[in-house]
Length: 161
Image 1 (cartoon, rainbow, N blue to C red):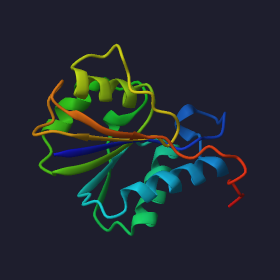
Image 2: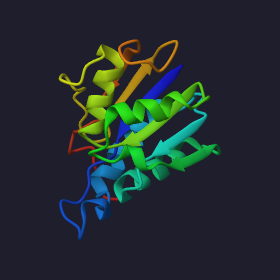
Image 3: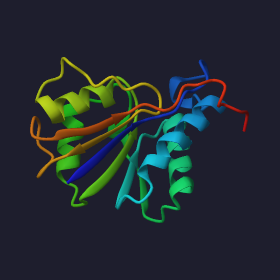
Image 4: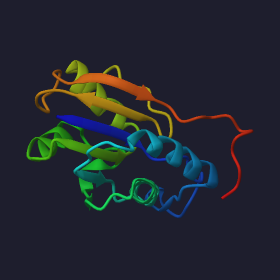
């Protein structure tokens, strides 16, 4: 089983509610950079938080990959969701290669739970960071961190969209 954890791209600092914050131009570029590392993968489903910035991140990934599979919005991928609950929901999935698009602190703590069986040493997930986890089953402490990639942050490379 392969699980990809993707934190949304950089977002505007404020909106009427946290859930309504949108990606900014830099965030869109970060997501494109991270999506490039998913090309050629056999993703079966993209599970995404209902928050705007995560939805926009998932849409960019879908477009960049030409992904025609299911993109499912799930309520258990919000910033303050319980990683244990997320693990229970994920355990019910039958897919063998899943991408989660979510937020901090959930994404870092979920990664720690899956890799180390703990919640006190979260993965350092900057905006648009992508973690690749692998294991026989989605069980706390039994997944292995294959790779943790952070998007390019060289402002000279960034151009407005």
